[in-house]
Amino acid sequence: LDTSCGTCHHPALAWADGRPLGAGVTGVGLGPDRVLDSDDPHITDMPRNVPTNLNAGLSSATPGGMPDPDGIMFYDSRAKSLEVQALQPTATFDEMRHYAYSDSAAADSVTARLRQIPGYEPFFRNAFPVYADSMDAHPEDESKHVIRVGSVEMALAAYQRELITLSSPYDDYVAGDDNALSDAQYRGLDLFFGRARCGSCHYGPMLSSYEMLRVGVAHSGPGRVPTTRGGTGDDVGLMEHTGQGADKYRFRTPSLRNVELTGPWFRNGTAMSLRETVEFFWLGGRMPAEDIPGTDVERLIDSRLQVDPDGLLDPRMVPMNDPASEDFLSDQDIDDIVEFMKALTDKTIDSPFIDPT
Image (tube, rainbow, N blue to C red; front, side):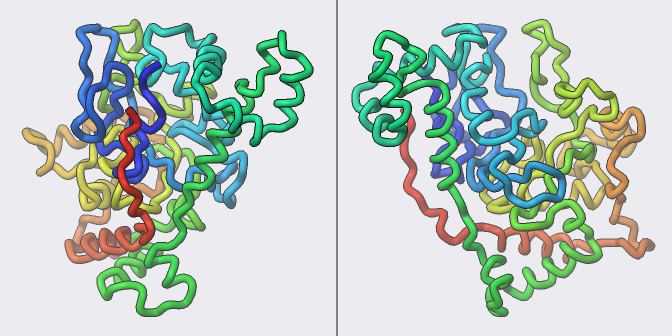
């Protein structure tokens, strides 16, 4: 296990990595320059874009809910709370595990390795005195060691809950500063929560409803289990964990806080600019044709059918590019929405880059 959490979630890139898809085990380099260095056909990029750790501790546990300690994690909401999420990446083949141990042995293997690192035990004793007393009372029982699965999960979660950014120009505006936003950002705000209806899914303190939605992002990447390892190469989202056909291709609505800093965007990193993400929704769930070489209208329609074979695209995904429609958004409107999204960037994100290796 030579890939740390900080390899893919590092401060210089707003606790993400700047790549369309994450590169875990065998990766060399950091950030957008990180590349896989392996001839093993079973090793691929990870199936999804690396999300930021910023404000992860403020996720909601239910659609439309407020921040909750048991907030949903991952794009497919398969974990509730940072504690439950904490060690799951260590069991993931592409991300951190590789051939080092089996997925079932991941947590025990990681904690055993942490016990061998000088200096950790005193810190764990200070943070978890009850566990320390249990360890001292049962020195022969490894499961009672102060560095155990539960304490590691709590330690990682506690750290991530400190990564809170609630000091953006938008926050200043909400607090009453009428000069916090530029003219373009004011226009964008009016459109975002008005005619453009972005705010129907992105609202509340985290600018997310935390709903599980199908919006039509086309497939890209190796899939949750790539074909080289006997999988389908698909990523069905929530359906992977519920088994319900109606949940196919439903993914968590992301928070838009610091969205300016966390590209490429969408769960598979297929949007390379904020404007492109807005244009995707402007087109009702299609990528702009000019950004996909060789794409024509027929291919765009096929792309949408690929991820909406049974007509379950969210009904809010309505095109807004028809000048004859009352919902029409102009180029200027799109630019203004993008400027408003930049007002969601926290003013305090200036941490120096720390090389996790």
